Image (tube, rainbow, N blue to C red; front, side, top):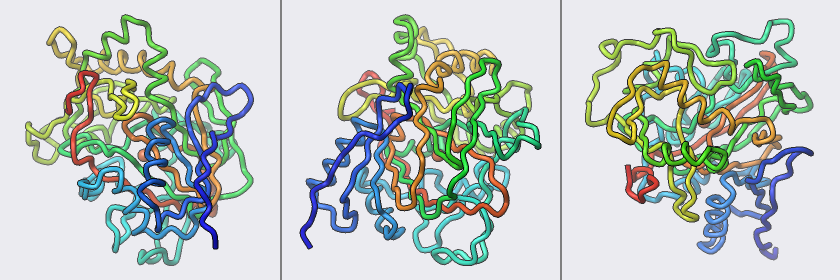
Length: 375
Ligand SMILES: [Fe+2]
């Protein structure tokens, strides 16, 4: 059989969308990928941020791991390390580790008898009612949804944010669409497929800022909480999924696992794209604890910190700027985890089955700041 050349196409977006990122790649034989073809994928990823490799139904967990690792060959461990074991973490219920490929996690919804060595698993799709302060009323629940939690995939303590995440759609629920509501008084909403993954471009988020704010974010840094997903676990999210409400509910540091001060992450607000040099505003809003201001002072009032981050990020998640992917079985998304933030969405009935595989590895080096240094 003749080997077909890779075909790269822009992702389709609905009428009125202002999304200017994303590409689909056809004819990709992941298990026999030449260096030249991998370079095409890598270049597309750093130019387009979200790349969907089509028709990857047969991709093994090992091949998915190897493809993901190829973006950062020195990386080895899953992006969250072993922190998922911490029962109090907000991440704990959402992921199951594939025993023979521990960098690959299974996520989804519904019961499955057996999958890749996991027996009798019950997957639960994250529902905003478990994380948000307010929720869509029960009687509207299957027709409406929200962004669950905007984030980049990163432990944000001890480990560096992964460069690339891969997400393979093994089983996708068919047919149903939902209206995603922001419920923040703006009336903003978005029509999405059930279980979509939503992405926004950090570069666009940066480009939308005033010149004054651009200068600020180029020179400010974010200090993340130690063990952030345990720290935030009693607190609740805004209705947009873009950061937390400040009610003083975060766990005191004395209630967290032991803290090694040297492992606390203080990262630039903007990350530099290694290929294009463009800046992305790249903040994990719910894990932020303090802001290191350009003048050297540290802003520690959590409410003020969160209001500032929200003001900077909210314009970038406007409905027209969100790419909400309509998953097809066999889609393998690769995304520039240091250049987009993303959120799961969707309200599932218990019997609606969805099964995805996610893989990323803590980066072997820090993230690049606007000054070209690694943090
Ligand atoms: Fe994620």
